[in-house]
Length: 334
Ligand code: UT7
Image 1 (tube, rainbow, N blue to C red):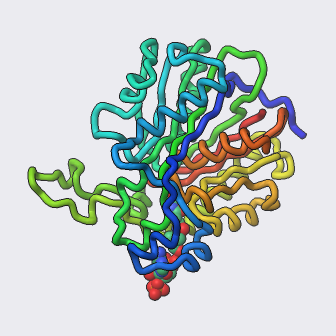
Image 2 (spheres, helix red, strand yellow; image 1 turned 90 degrees about the vertical axis):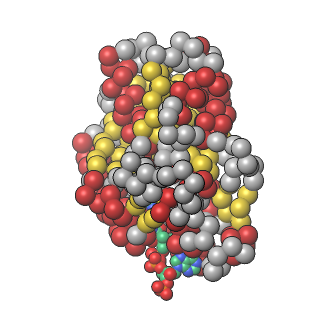
């Protein structure tokens, strides 16, 4: 196994939070023309978590961040940067990262920004953090993926409303440690020409601004060409994962745990097949939480770690795909 993998980006702590309220497939059967059987067969999703009224993206991010800080034995005052991936910010401005900074009381934080990279929001955030610790080795960077997907779901559209859920995951990335879990490598890619396949807020942005008193239409919510997205997701993630493994002199057998974006169990299965990965080494929680977009792999990583599925020395591969279209692969060493 290749073990001379260098890094200057250390993982200090992980945390996640999902709201308590469970939305089951049978509850969705009461809202749209769907069935538990269709949802389970086509997606693997059995239930998802949904916020209670008044609970926002920054609220979920706050709980996940506090858990990551606790695991890192750090205080909010130690945070120097916050990078938050989301497509469901609390408001358009200020950034949800700034709202989170205030909630945490992270008064020594120099920079707090949101990034819009769809379901790759968290992994794109790790790429930015990796760059920041190079120029500022003393940084403690809070990278969060947080989503209230339910706020952008049209509960009259069976094509999308059965797929998504709410939640948040966080990681603290630091540059000044000598050993411990670390980010080994990241590859990212963007294909804006395919952006039309997955869009949110076709109305209410600068393209089609709202007027006071205007009624919200379905254009405000998620629109997706599921079949096309499915194809690009499997092909794109498989190619990028082979590329990052090859670049680092690794084979699928060297990876102890593969954590792909939790969008659809059929995508995960097809991807594992293309990578010759046995499903026993693939982490899956899509049946419990649905697709939590930017929070997806952050939640899965933290959950897998807390459950003891990741041991010291293990190599973990993260793989994401989302609106943009965006793609990212990340290799971590624990
Ligand atoms: O995280 C961002 C990335 N997003 C994704 O990864 C999503 C990728 N796409 C997918 O996961 C799948 O394409 C879906 C789960 C969205 C759809 O599964 P599919 O096997 O591709 O189904 P389909 O879109 O080809 O639809 C098959 C049929 C259609 O009926 P007809 O036209 O064959 O009569 C749909 O109208 O299933 C129908 N359908 C439903 N039926 C019951 C679509 N949604 C539902 C539903 N319940 N909820």
